[in-house]
Amino acid sequence: MKIKNLILVVLLLLTSCSKKEDISLLERADKEYQKKNLKTAIELYNNFVQKYPQNLKSAEALFKLSQIYLSELRMPKEAIKFLEQIIQNYPNTKEAMNALFMLGFIHANEIHNYEKAKEYYQKFLELYPNSELAVSAKFELENLGKEPQKIITK
Image 1 (cartoon, rainbow, N blue to C red):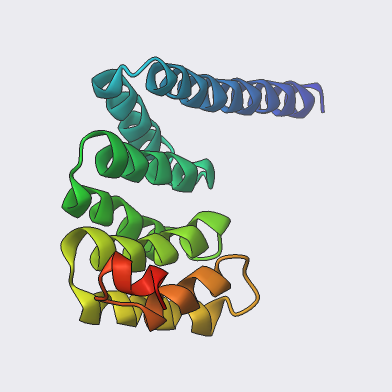
Image 2: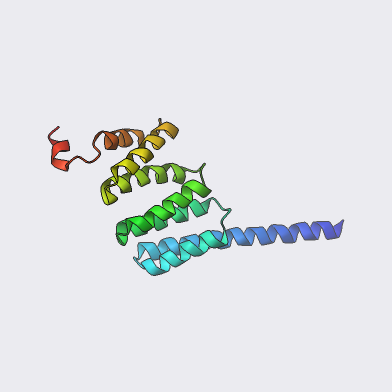
């Protein structure tokens, strides 16, 4: 009986240490991102996702990677890869909802592939009709391909 208890305590300690390590790795990545050390942040986020693929925080790490590639590095096609990973591997997360919207946004506003954008926005509205982003998705759908001036004077 004592051996079972000892094994149980050791397992609890090991899992609690790994959770601390999980959080520590993400916190380090976040700090590097805030300091604009993008290369290091990218490495740390990728390490987290590779090391802890079952952890739902990996969806957050992937979303942050997509933000870095879209906003900081201006590489929308790379951002798309991370967003698609979220939808495929973490479909029931808040990040999956945001990723689906962002896929529509990137295709519409960065790549100008309006057909693909339309698909993503329609799927978003189908899956998340009551989301805060639903109004934005509808607006985007109504104005796909239009010049900003025409939207403003509408």
